[in-house]
Each structure stands twice: as C-alpha cells, then as structure tokens.
Length: 379
View 1 (cartoon, helix red, strand yellow):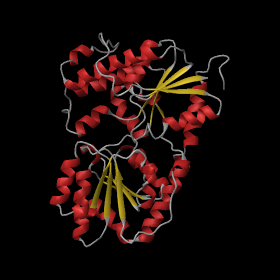
View 2 (spheres, helix red, strand yellow):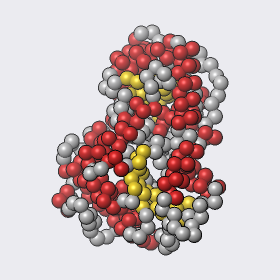
View 3 (tube, one colour):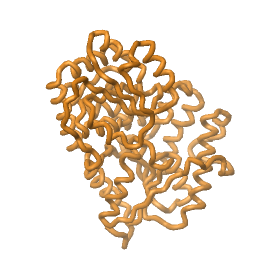
View 4 (tube, one colour):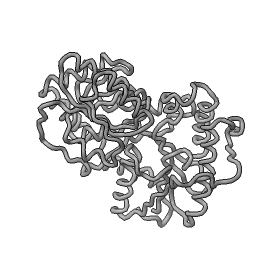
C-alpha cells in the first residue's frame, strides 16, 4: 500500500503528532509498506488564491475576523502547495489536521482520506483568551466538524472524552474511532537516581490553557509550608514574561528554571522526579504518557484525556482544574514521601508501557488501513 500521512506543519514541535507520526512511518516502512509524510512549510504564507467553498455551510458568513481569515488563507496555501508538490497517487491518505484532510479530499476525491482529530483549535483559542465563547470564530471552527463528517471516509480521535466533545457538532459521533496515542519505548531511557531535593518538571507551550499560573501559585503554597523543590519549565510561548514576573512576585524565582523550547524533552525528563501539568483542557495529553515512560510520578487535572491516563492515587494524582490548593496538596504528597512517589512513578510507567505502546497503534492502524486496500496493493 502507498500511504500518505498529511500533517499541518512539519513535525518539529513536541506534542502528539510530532511524538508519534514519524515513528509510525518508520515502523510501517520497516514492515514493507510505503508510507510518506507531507506538510506545509511554515514559510508559505499568502500564496493560495481563490475562494474556499464548503458543502455544509457558507464560510463567507464568517469572514472578516483575523482567525477565520487566516484559517481560510492557510487552506488556500495548503491547496497551492499540495497541487504543486504532489504528482503521484496514493492508495490512502491519513490526515492529521482538518485543513490537510479537507484539502486532500478536494484535490484527490477518489482517494480514501482518513482524519485523526488530535485537538480542538477553538477550545484552545477560548482558553488562551484569543476569541470569545460563542462568537463567529468558534461558530466557524465548530462548523468545520460537520464538513469533516460529510467529507471524510473515516474520522479518528485520541480519547473517549474528546469524542464526547465532538458529539454536539456531528450527526453521529459514535462512528468516530478512538485510537489513543502511542509512543516508541526506545525513545525513553529511565534512569535510576535519587535527587536530594525533589525535582519537578513541566513541558508545554506557555499559554493560558496549560494552567501554569495555577502551578506557580501551588508551588508558592508548597514553599510556604517549608518544602524545598526545583521546578523546571520546558517550553516557550506568549506567557513566558508574565510567568517569570509571577515567579518573582510569589518569591519563587530561585526555585524555578525556565529553559525555553527544547526539541527532545524526553531525553531530559528521566533525571527528574515529578511531572506536573494543570491543563485547563487536553484532548489526550501526550506528555503525560511520555513522562510516565521516563519513570516520573504524574500530577494532572481531571480533564479530557489526562483523566483517561491517570487513575487517581493508583498511577498518579488528579486534581480539579483552577485549584492551587488542591494542586499544592497533591504535590506535597509526592514531595514529602519518596516511597509513595516511587510507587506512583512505577505504576504510571507500567500503564504507559502496556496501554500506550506504539506497537498497539501500529496494529490498530494497520487493521483500518487494510479496509481501504486496493487489489494488488501490498499488505
């Protein structure tokens, strides 16, 4: 079979798609399947011309806002780049972004196109304060789900909770197939170590949706109770200066290290003790599984895919979002008791190894891909 994995931007950033799709390609190619990656270079801006027409709603009714106009222009840019670069036929296209999926179906209507929806752009924009709830931008972005349901040969997503999120925007969300993300264990090399001072780490974009303001307030409470620790923040984003200033105001600057963007944080994580990320929403939360595979104890919020990965006090700790007191209490349990921390970390590793293996994803995708195999295609 000749399969194209159609991404949005190149797989350079940490996260679900970048942490998985290139490794899926490697495994399938090793099995003798021909799989290629395709994406839109970040330098492509304003090249596409024309008008975007959807079958299920009138996109022009939402034009005039920066988010919608940029989305439509990016769609046209993807059409321009794809038309220029792809000159061969594929047996199947598996897209990992709505724009990639709809463009591929527009340009190759006779080719089966599958889409994995990895996250919610509109929910991220709302949580990050960039659009208002129920405004034109959210209405446009949620209308896209109905277009996808009409156009795609199959839709997949990464968690049961995210399928439930999609349900109000589709006729039959039960048809969405859930395949949780999987990770190549060879990338993760846990290290036996004992840190005299507990080392906390978080890895994310520095945006409001990730709840790092809550984390800093929780750490301030932890410090006031007399606990010593270091918090390592890996990632960059528009909130960095604000978070640095908040650390100073909370008398935490000596306890926090801001690293900025890092391409392979999994190479760094095994040296730490506790992974914590109090997200306000998360479709899956790949970084939790990655941290678990590095033998870190997990602390997360009871939202989305995080709650599907963590069973509270079994393989990690779950707290309600927006609650610094609860988060601080959870961190205190792990900081104050090395044995408890060790047991949580090993339980997290065991579940991640058994449930979130890349081989499981390969097997599930292979079964789906075979449904679209044409006569004579490789198996």
